[in-house]
Amino acid sequence: MMSGPLYEAEDCRRFAENLKAMRELAGLSREELAAEIRFSPSVIASIEALHRAPTVEQGRRLDEAFKVKEFFETAAKKIRGQSYPEPFRDYAEEEAKADALYICEHSLIPGPLQTED
Figure 1 (cartoon, rainbow, N blue to C red):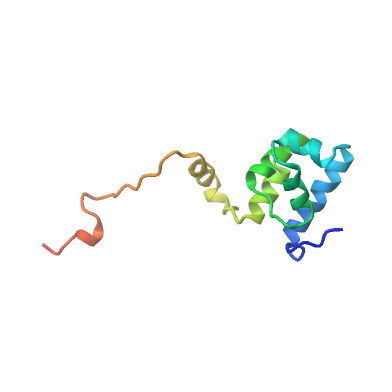
Figure 2: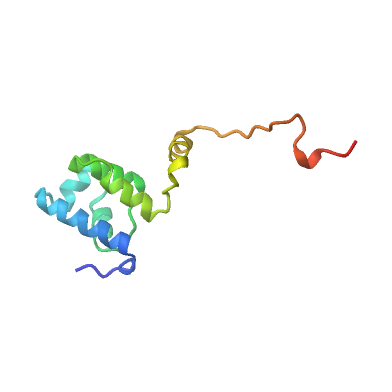
């Protein structure tokens, strides 16, 4: 029975229910699934028991394990507050992959340093 501290969080509860249902449908134990997605069995147990919110990376690996397209990853992004408005999705995805971020000014001297002269 799910009764962890995240029980009231509907998105977490739905994620945990789907995870448990798909794991059982696939006939996998927590240990077998954990080995496949390269996380510990306690992580799977914690998510299913609603003691831990899933990460986006865990969602991505669960999608690979169950051969579904962005099902768990999308749910984890929603839980983690990483969903962006449609016009910014490509930018946000690219920003997440970036090694460095730079700020470019459209003028030689940034606004706060400009004087009337």
